[in-house]
Length: 224
Picture (tube, rainbow, N blue to C red):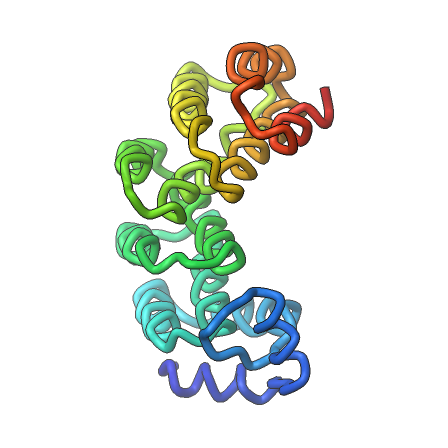
């Protein structure tokens, strides 16, 4: 399947009025087609089941390059799968998208695909660590979003605990950044962690909570 053929399938579900609303909601300058997320889910599920890994990676690359909102979401969904073998090309493509992040919706879809590849090979967290030093807010934020699986373990292994602590160090280094999306990402990570490790979340908030923005501190402690 070519990107053009995939775009034809996506475009068949376009809705101009919905596109107008979505573009306003996302405050985006890129083209929107107004295709609902469930439609993209169905299309990409079929593509994942019928295309081999090499074809899927190439298709995801082509869709991303269109810079159309739904195409970029579909590109991410094509690679959101726990088992992809081999997955090096998929991981490399997802990493190549990170500098393009400019909105939470597309970034979060891409990070969901990246989460699967990180869990498959946790050593890749070393690459993600470099993102925390970026001047690009969306890249720094992505380091927290893509590592969210490490908030969800009830019985983490030693390697998982080490990664969890590494990410908490990143979050602590982000606290002085007053950018709303950064504060929101810190709160998101801590809120999810609190469901599985309340004491560690409380310890972080005891140490850094007063320096966080009030809304972020409140959200982080929502389930404590």
